[in-house]
Length: 285
Image (cartoon, rainbow, N blue to C red; front, side):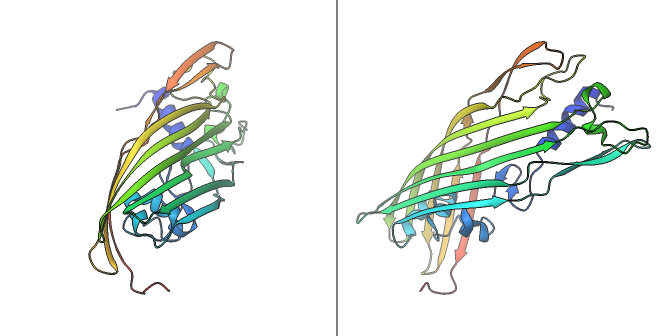
């Protein structure tokens, strides 16, 4: 079965827009936050090592931290992003993205009381993507990327995307017994989304509409967690993160020939269910 030309272009552009550094993300979602949790590859459902990682991975684990903590970190991503395109027996080429460095801040707070209650808070970027590919003009020799050819020549032209998701989570954990803690957190999300050209709306004769103005969407969700200490250095952890429900993104846009177009788009954040086991071979000093 042959896919319609418009559908093929739509799928290709989505793949381009979602280009991400594979060493740091799972799709467009970070697999770890903060330098300590990232150094463990994002593992942290059953650990209580740092305030940032504990708040993010399993809110119940903040009860097992030794003391109250306040942490702030900055991470720098320097991904190498390029896009190659070719047509069998035809042109082929590569364009490089001008979007290189990305700074990811994270903040974590844990306050331990003299009662079984422990309170936490986190604020951090948990997901995102972005590219900035230039357009290239067709050449008689065929040394160009056909995907980045101007829209009038059947390509997409220059391609730009930027998606940023910031999450704020106040949380609380209760120490049911010295070996068991339960936690709950409320996720408050703010996301901004920019895509140009916009591929989810049918093009007219002049091409796809633009989505260059940042559209902001607010969302919410919740997190539930449990941590159980089997032995002195062996712990089990369970976590449930609900889907993050967002408002629709919307744009007042236009096609390349100036024809006005208004459109909406929904981009959510998936549910996560996880479990973990941790063993501490060396006693902390």
